[in-house]
Length: 252
Image (cartoon, rainbow, N blue to C red):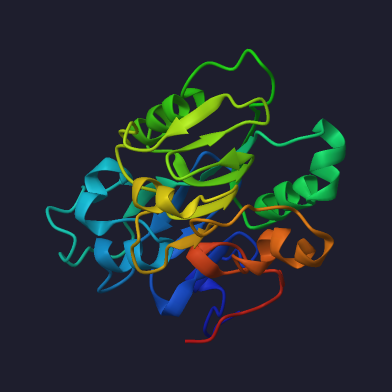
């Protein structure tokens, strides 16, 4: 039949794609990297502002499937070029009480929520006495070099200089992390984790950070349960994620 295709903006797939603010078609389908398809007038700076990554270092996180890497972040891109962007959230558990601890802080619920948003979740257990020094830091460095990691979801312990597991194994040391690019979304449930922000977070428009101020001992009290839920920190359609309503058509 003739007439306007109201789903054309999302590649005929409103479940897997969003057209945030009428720009860039972003398709997060639980793979390590997601596709971002340019429309008329799009730039890498616009894309980075949507997904929360740093446009100044876009060459370190942007890949290309069809087309060429733009020479600058403000260069207008021809419509229909397909780029690859990081789509992996590292879910690192360094907390107490194993499965019971995870149940108490809604760990599995949050993993499922990240999956629903379209992210690929790399879930890693960092509890135990045999964890190597800076093991999470090393994994983050490798994941940024591979251009796959979008964010970090961490439960464990911390202070102003490092993140630890429940057995005091140091997982990330402040000042000792060499990321290829900083992350778009960080949810760090640990004591005094805010000093890690400059080390982990891009700080770009669209980026998301949750941490704990210096001097605060973070304890999972029952009155904090809503705070544990990642849906309190990142919503559907933010950072180019999927819509909760698969039948929603975004007007422009």
